[in-house]
Image (cartoon, rainbow over all chains, first blue to last red; front, top):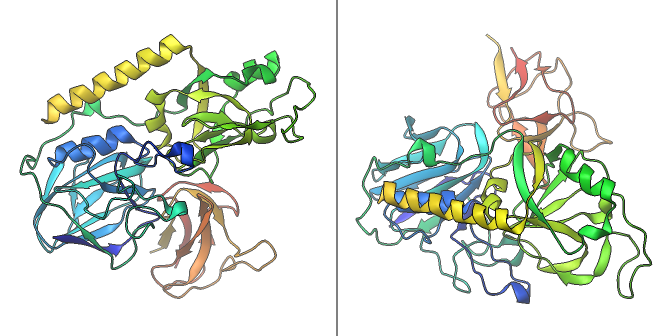
Length: 324
Length: 78
């Protein structure tokens, strides 16, 4: 069976949980930016959590089904329609052959995840169906979906049931201002104490250019550097370092002005210093931030980061139990 | 009754195709269905906002280069 793309939305891509293992070769992990939402959507329709679905950013696509299927939409809050009848989010919806799934204007969050029973069955590339558009890898010919694409759908497990839902208390979206917890890193000493304090005091705003590679923030005060003679091999700007590896979640601040948090499609290395890393528990949240959303960074230590990670894993387990 | 044009996306609204070019539609002007009335910039791309129906005496409710949310009313017309 297949699903036909009537309207693609804006940069709607096939995503699963990504292709870890190639970052040292410059190929990013990729995969859904909001993994909890992607996993939840899959569970609702009876798929493996790592099955491929669609990630729609800011705007939903319109899809036509050629066969009966279960569908679930999680993540961003936007009105969901099947043939113009509004449907609940975070819930398995039965769609009949010939019906169309469509969306209204985004209400909150940024990315909706659409899972279809059986999962999208485009050919895997390096172990994943995730679309890495810049590298033309995965998904539909390595690109976002387009009008008249026919998305192949795998065989449904039969485990999903219409009406299954993730309880409200277990759904996650951003607050306002959104808070991103950050663990200061290797280059934290490169900025002055006043700048270290100011970074956490300031209210930042998501820049409109924020995307799957990185989320840029503006409106905070520029960071003041501790003076030093630039080491051999580093660029001349005080924010330059001798090239290093960029972890997922790392926060670089080119020129000391606008922090960028690297996300799923990030480059793997380069010559900008990183003041720290957003903790793994808060990375999903970044995928749900709209442009201009106010954001504060909150300083945490490793113990707090690990506790938050465990809490996040426990939340996912509660969703599995509630849906399964 | 006034017809409204809403932003399909969150981002930054522009009334001109480029800084040195004239506005797509002047305040008080008329549009045909499918005409571009502005751009929304988000994720390093520019998305055209089109009028779904024809209208006259267009009145913009959002300034050039202002941030907008999805569904925000950009303009009204008769």
